[in-house]
Length: 284
Image 1 (cartoon, rainbow, N blue to C red):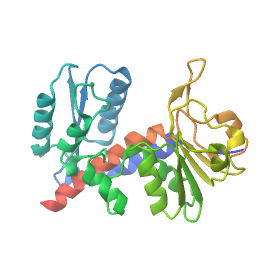
Image 2 (image 1 turned 30 degrees about the horizontal axis):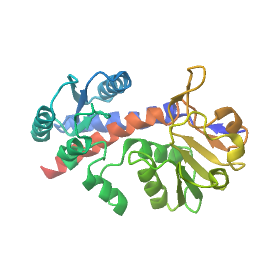
Image 3 (image 1 turned 30 degrees about the vertical axis):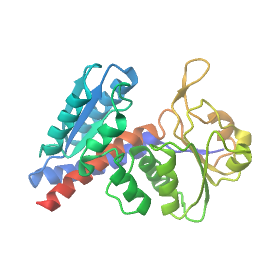
């Protein structure tokens, strides 16, 4: 039976450290600041934004929240970003995705100053991650690495399989595991013999967006299973991409949903904002 990786507990430990560092920065005359921009009425996005604002208050950050109407034009949004890029109180800018269809997500992401891009989606930051020479990491993959670290799970030399190839999770996750000296394979919807590949993984990270997709017969005995998914099962109950019950019996470590990777995502956003603020202090 697996040991459950408690994301809430680990997130609380990391946030305590962020709060301490923030207090020291404030004493030195700099309060980390995060601006969160949301366009439209997407209910899931609104929940995420509220959680982010609350998390900022908990660690002592200054925060600004911009809730823009659905019909906001690209010009208006880009003008707001340009203003925030110049604002010395703001060290991190986060534009909540997805955006309404009339707005070009790529153009919006590229408009954010790379030094304030605390989601690490700007091509400059993506390139730095590829090279292993980065300031920020995408929040979810960074959170996964922190869960492994705090759980004492060694990545070096392990066979790692990432199921999912999104720009937000799958691709950067593979990079980070490789930089930690894991041997990495990326699988996706077109992968042949997927179960054979997942069953060879010492560390399996699943981010495919399909409820309970990975079952116990698809994993190796003693594997570490990290579930990035956030889905609803047939009864409308929150679940992940991994069938927790069947995998729990075989895995050595497993993350639950909720309470696994989720709490780490916002925590790493705070970490990125702190890094951005400290970097600004060095530039002075």
